[in-house]
Length: 117
Image (cartoon, rainbow, N blue to C red; front, side):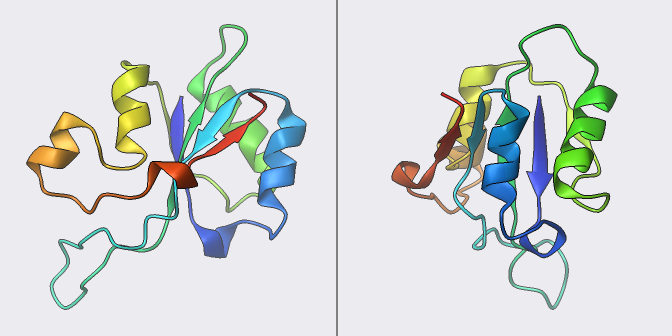
C-alpha cells in the first residue's frame, strides 16, 4: 500500500508511532521541491510518500484506519494498493521511469527512512 503524509497533519513523534504499528514501511525524503500545477504556486505542499507492506491480506480501508489510529484523524486521507513495489520504491526519490520522464526533482535515496526492516 502507499499513502501520503503531510508534516502539518502528523505528530512530531510520527516515526516512532509508525514503528509501533509493527509492519515494514519505507518513507520518502520530504518532498518539498515538487513543482505545482496550480497557478501562482511554485511548489506543491510538502509531503512524504510512504510504502506500507502488510503482513496479511488487508484492505486499503483497514490500513487507513490503522494509520489514523497511530497518527491522528487528519493524518491520512487516501491509501492505495501498490501494483509494482519496485517502481513505487523508485518513486520515493523520483527515480522511477515516469518521474524521470516528467523531469521531477530527484531526492537523495540516502534520506529514505526504513521502518521495521
